Length: 83
Image (tube, one colour):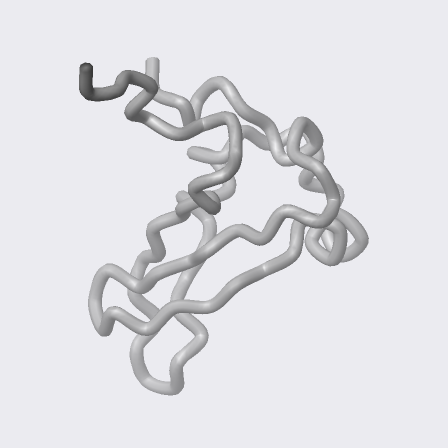
């Protein structure tokens, strides 16, 4: 189970910005969670479900998008350190 399957949009603070990167053209954009929750009834969606329904907004592309959270969030993958 990945971190995208454990975290819902409602679990994140409203000031957190989600980065959406197009897998086809590489363009990216940031969406604040507070703005997203106001537009969508998506607070109950897990991040992987939200990622599956996102498409690129660049004219003529329409590719699938990858979701990423800022590095200061709780979902950071590497938790270890160097001794």
